[in-house]
Image (tube, rainbow, N blue to C red; front, top):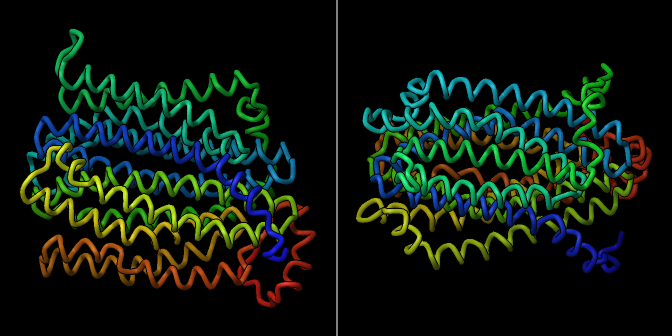
Length: 472
């Protein structure tokens, strides 16, 4: 498709239909995290830092399940484009089984072995003690949260994005209200402190799952409740699912381990730095929230076209959605920097911790433009069938650049946070250059549907793709 014939109006409308609800959903979630931090900040910087470290364990859990989410999105979006209902249900069932297994493992460790987790993330006993109280309760939220994520992935991949948004609205308001009741002891409740924040998270997770289920029933959504179809698996289809998922799973697992090493180093900095990082992680969610809308839109729109056999349309859409994503992150970063001082103060930081938080937020908003561009390209490649390229690049540069730089600088040289923090993202620009070259090569177009595969040879011939590289 020639670029001068590209229908920008329809393209932007299709992006908005998917991206705006997803961005709003993530914005609500990030806002709830900010409110959480503000409420907990009244308990002191130590409590803020402890809960912030607990959130790093939750991020490790993300590494455990996100590979299955990526694989599920790949198959469901392409089967959606091909109108293959059996493929959609089967892919959801496989994704659900894998994700709930991860939820059971991480939830069990949080509930029964929270001391093991906190010893890993910090060497400060008083921070560990607070984190243990929080994890013992919040672990019950993990299965509920992961079920909602799995169901929401199915809904989004089939362009039903409003129900996850409504569920997030209900969840956020539940979380804020229950925080107010349980942290401080309002409406006759006992004041539970950080344990109250964990209880509120469990309540919010339950509400999220309930709204997703009730909302899907209300619109008679055809895929979420076809239980038999979810677990009717042919051996060759299961093999294909895991073959495509395996690189994504390895990416997320080893990336999660790498990030854990980075967080262990950060968790051994000063208490002021730990509190500053906790606040930063909350604001980071705002940027990721806006980005996630574009990433989901790209995954669904591009993956759908690949599955339907419209390979040129997929190629042209991908080349345009990545720059739009990066421009959106620029805008978001500017807004955050304008209001960051007020936000940091509202979260209870002052003095040294305020200065560190202000610095790392400024650095991240600059780096995030490239970082989120990389992320969006990787998600686009995955939904189109290329689960390897982004994985290899991310892991190689994480382990040869980021981990050595952060570990040596933080533990051996003991540099300040002002030097240490930028090293966490020292690989982004190099990966971005390679990813952009791959984007324009078109080699990432690798359908899993018969409609897509039938058009692949012609697509490669017209675009001069002689060496497609890795492919199933």
